[in-house]
Length: 99
Image 1: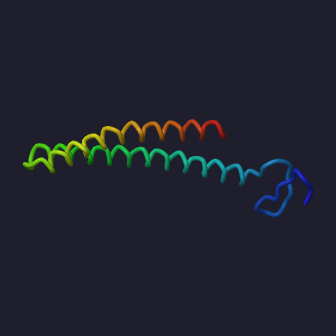
Image 2: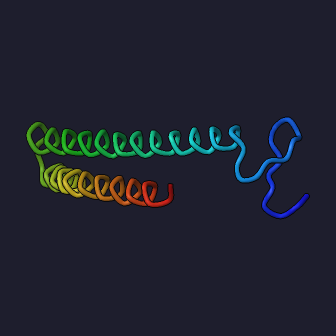
Image 3: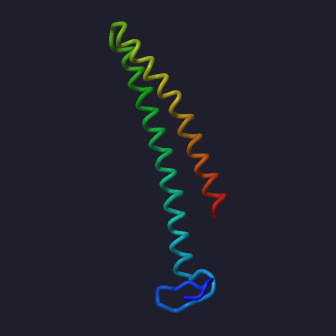
């Protein structure tokens, strides 16, 4: 095969990228954007669960160990949410820059 030529799905040679390859690449990029959004939602869901669990421990269970664990869960949830948002934005910026 000559340099600069791409073989399409039908076996024909064409200059540049074939339409099939362009569609496949675009769909792959769309799937990656959607995966990034799902990952952000997982961070949000986990942060909310940590905050809810921590608040429940602090308010409903008596004792120093449950209070300490509850406050640690609250802190972890409060730190996880901005981290997940930061990660989402970094990946989104990278994806937009590579396309």
